[in-house]
Image (cartoon, rainbow, N blue to C red; front, side, top):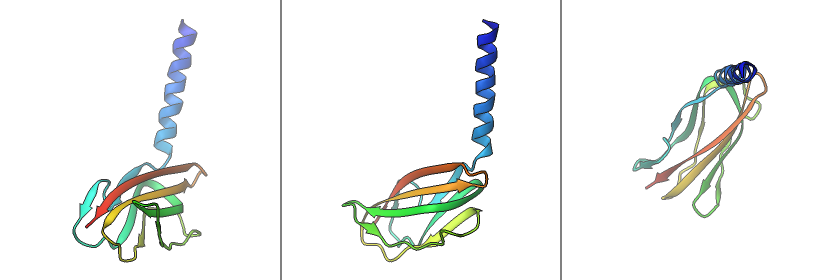
Length: 115
């Protein structure tokens, strides 16, 4: 029983260290679930720790991608942003992948509506 408790305690400690060692998302623009009346001019991703965005896709409700340009060879940063073209009224999903300075990959997505 003591061995089992020690194993679970060790696992919990290792898991919590890994969570804090990597760049958790702290904020996005547009915000997840936002309903924007003004034109969304940019995509912004803010992380707890420096991350390098390696993939960014913005997709409309019918699966049509929006042309988004960014420097895939850019430096790691806590605050990533890139400009968007003029968006038509629609629902959009932002899909992103980023790599921490330690090589750990993270990915996520969020949605917003452009009126």
